[in-house]
Length: 213
Image (cartoon, rainbow, N blue to C red; front, side, top):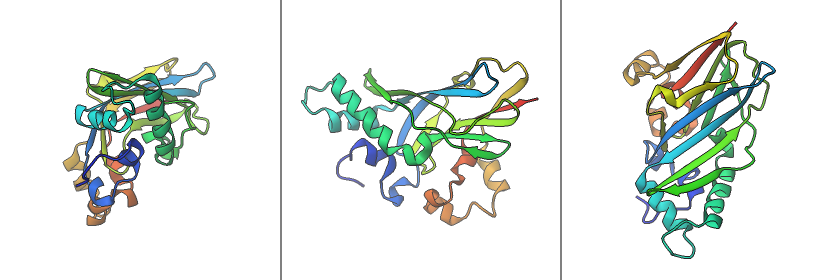
């Protein structure tokens, strides 16, 4: 175990593999998928609310004036740190078009707030490639290293906004036992010991599936 919490970038992105084998950070999420007037996905709005333990560690690391409050410059520093550290993880955003992965462009800013003892982060990302409203699209948020558990408390926390009239949608919450049973040949010991080397954790992630004509 670490003797003290590391800076936020290290906590989210650079802890030893052994420490990342199961979640140590927990966050409730909301994802708004926005369709543009041109018939493409325009952007996705993320809101993450982190657990009190992790939030208190962030307070200790970034409260430079030790007033037990995260002032605006300190909140901005947290946002800049996360903006840099999560780029290699696609900002935990998982998009597919007919099964093909689509990356996201680097957001302009990650906004951070600290309320009632919890860190909140909210930011918008855009698909790195065009995502027309055709075929099967999926949208989700997960940490491929399994260090952070990002959960949607209710199905209403995955939202479609804009013109999706020609589409049907459903929130999918995979059953862990079913996923393991269906993927025995690929979910090996190596996955559980080093999830960063397989990225199979996406099989367990909650997602919105959208099918458009």
